[in-house]
Length: 335
Image 1: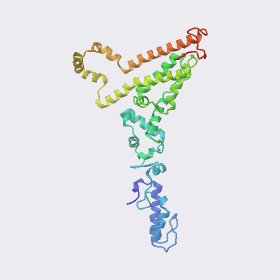
Image 2 (image 1 turned 45 degrees about the horizontal axis):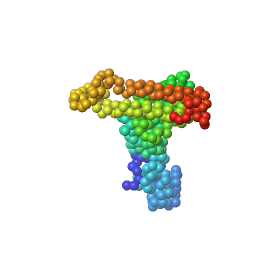
Image 3 (image 1 turned 90 degrees about the vertical axis):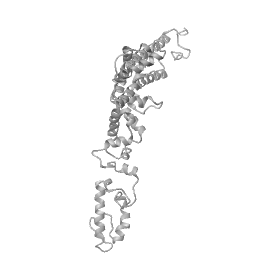
Image 4 (image 1 turned 60 degrees about the horizontal axis):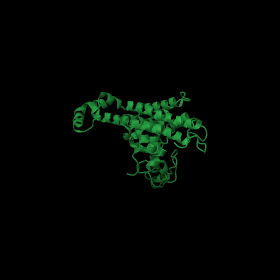
């Protein structure tokens, strides 16, 4: 049997099919050329005409009726009737925000590796091709997911006073985002081609504005802003790995470490690791991702402070002095 099963038809499609069947039955009882009242575009010129030419003339209107016309292209059909699904009519309207939110909830629950167009469609109870009407590809879905979660944590305007307080605030906000959605670091840290996500880019722009007016050239401000983001993403990677391990083993990091104590002691007895052998509870706590984040953030900001002090000293020194600006008046020779 050609054509799609009746369950794929919309209500309007089923109504047109019903009218067609009524027209065919009427045509067998009337002479050729008589058009039944209310039979639409079906011309009843005898059974052959109704079942042949009449069906061909109306085939665009009855795609999906068994035995009527040819099978429609599935992609075009999904874009034409997005409410159609593999299991019937979906409940409620399908749109891009709903698709993105469903993908985010799926990633929060099962990790970003579990997110696919087919899996999202299953969560929504719709056919997978229906999603492509609103999201062109998995890459675009990734971008939209990242943009959505960063949009949930916009940075304040104008923010606290001072460049250091601003940069620290932006770092803590981004870190909190990675705690809530550990999978985000996988999407933004494992590529040199970052997501096209305006809300993520807003963090870079905000950090550069925090540094503006401190005698740094534009390229250096870009480097500092990206350095902060890169540090946060790499520091957050263990959060994602820990969430994945916890789902797989149902054990916390502490429980995992406790279970491996005997193996660790055996390794330390046989290997020459004088510093690692001193590793105890205090060191274990220091190695927690949260504490690594805090330690690294302060050291990084200390480095930025040193850079700004050097730029300020170079700009304040008399022209021609060893610490003075270069001949081109840039304020700093090279960073």
